[in-house]
Length: 194
Image (cartoon, rainbow, N blue to C red; front, side, top):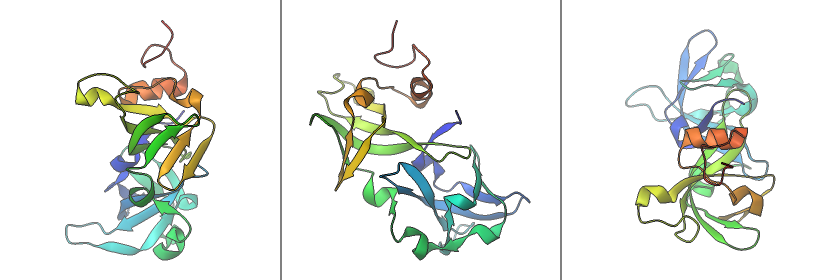
């Protein structure tokens, strides 16, 4: 499995060609929530006073999504930003702040961030959630911010994500624990076998 990262951590990540030229930086992540994958990025210029670019970066032009940069073959992969976002949602407008419920109607919480797979995958693998007190009991505020896998099925209805029951059976407190959970490594997440 490739490195997992949060979509918010991609904001301001440089977009670099394989030749080493920094052509832009990520402004926002565009995704197809129903397909649970990144479809591209809106971009901004590289500099303090740079504004949004009229070009976007479709996922098909991404060579690799790395820890430090989004790598592309060359600048020719960029497309008109308006065309790229016409039928997709950027994360801020659609997913962040959405309610998360199970298929049985139990409220889990609200989406704080989206966890995506780096490398060449671009899959949405889970969510960082401000958990409802009934879902994750405890007094400490930071304990109620957990990572939940998206599961085999994901339904997006209006401003709510509906997850399968088995997806919310296990949660992780941090991204390394969530990585272990998704990879099937026991012991780093809540609900793991002893």
